[in-house]
Image 1: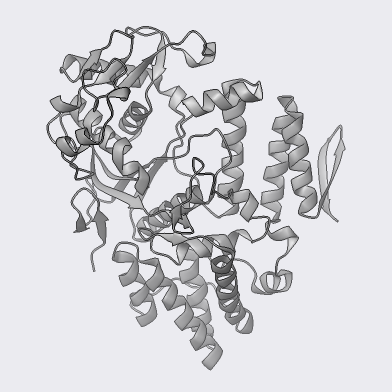
Image 2: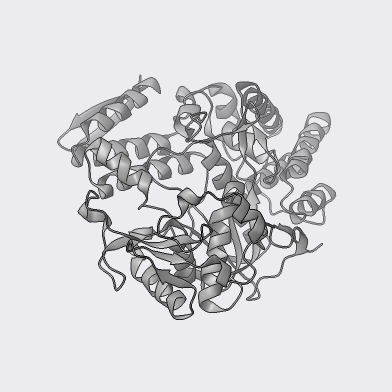
Length: 461
């Protein structure tokens, strides 16, 4: 069975074949690093981690790029509030991102570009758009994209220009020729810090948000690539604007497949920092182990809304325990997966149909039932091997079951070492408040730190 992916651009499932045979190039919009990652970010990171794992399992080479937005209005405000430099804030938040992602078993992308390292590419792209008559300079010093001059604007979101115009307010004009136009280059403001200003042919300033991803994806993957992903909230305007910029400048399709993961909801409302109804990954990991959180995300289809609650997390925890109980009852062997085997074939068919993890997880439970019924080593071995494809069931079953809510729920050694490294970075940058927060977090995890001239050692209380 051929792999089929739901293409948001086409609004249908389509057979996937990479532009270059055997090699998939995938770009996913990452985080704006002004605060700790919340569970909505975890949902996206886990979803596309599963995607790239399955592509590799299918015998494809994958170049996976997930960007970091390290220049933004929110970042500037937070750094100013904290009395620290933009770089100090973003370095600290990137390290925290890695700690959280590593804990959840998310494999690092092949490239993780920072926007501030690609400003020259953004300026080159803006110059191309100006030459093509798609960008113009405003009296206030900004450079804007002329939406109505790009044929096909709205093709990703399915919105017509008239519909979009009806939803705009005159107040957003701010030097624009049309309310629909969006900023490519923001002119420098007198009250902004010096480290957010770049000199350019368009004057001193900084890039707009949308141009960042167009430049980074082109730099690392080319003018056309296979998959562009991100959260459903990015479909419009961010991804729509990326298409307009990239295709307006290059004249070729930016990405063949557009994938969007669904929201995490709290009381049927999207989890977001702006609404104040978010839970950070590290807060959740104070109460649940990383694999329990990963399983909570994986057992739902990536495009479906996912309801966040203690009840759903507790259910995921109990379900994962049942799988590990089967592995403990009949210790598995390390085996290569025979994809002709009936349960493995069902698993593959599910994953090949738009990464249908709920059906794939159902196969895991069927195998666990077979282990409990027949004490089959082959079923136990296949259970562990298929679980590994999803980034699950690789811990020692006895340790997993005996520790229960162990080590303050997220205390594997790698997680602890990452937190200690983050604390060292905070101390080096004289962010003693953050260093103390990390010490307290480790203490809550049952970890005692011992600082010495040779470094920091730790032990469990």
